[in-house]
Amino acid sequence: MAGKQTLSPHTWVVMPGFNEAKYLDLAISKTLKYTKNIIYVDDGSQDQSAKIAQKKLRHVLVHEVNLGKGAALKTGCDYAFKKLKAKAVILMDADDQHDPAELPLFQEHLDRGAGIVLGARSLFSSMPLMRKLGNAFVSGVVLVLFWRYIPDILSGYKAFTYKTYQQIYWHSTDYSVELEIASKIAKNKLKFALVSIKTIYHDQDKGMNVIDAVKVIFKIIALRIGL
Image (tube, rainbow, N blue to C red):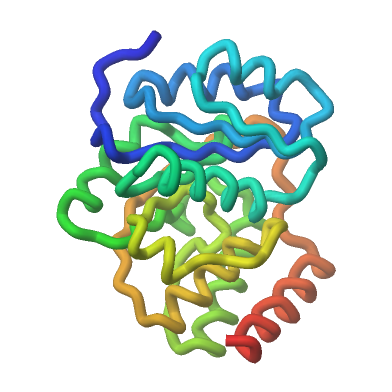
């Protein structure tokens, strides 16, 4: 079912997904070339996502209703660390927008002692313009409020150890989980390693609009006040 495992047997990949039937099989198949340690968390999908995952994976967790990406990630991480006794997890999106060939790069940094490893896309890549502007905007706001520059905050490709998980443990249930993680990295002055990643865009990506930007500003300010 899988090729040679190139990740540590104590590292688990956590994939959250919501209605990902279109690309999920491909994403899982490509990831299995590098590790069998995959946890798919189906966040209340209305399509066949869970069944697709169950045909390939032993560990498929299902939310009966849609709770949001942050909640799905927490379900997967808690399962990995508490039930499977993982030492580290790598988060990947289930829509095949992350390249599993980069997984060993995350593992290398973990092996060298990094507590958290962030996947960051270059602003000079083929990323859609609005996505580039949105990412730069979010990093800029975090820099102003927290005095810490963290690139590509909105990227969902990242890895961390159990110790770091306890330091960045989030309460956000939706996509703002990425912002909360970034804010806790800044607040706790955590050192992080970076992996330059590419992202595969299957469909039109419109990026962040004005309304999204306003929501992000208020969310980051709320996190700053609440920390």
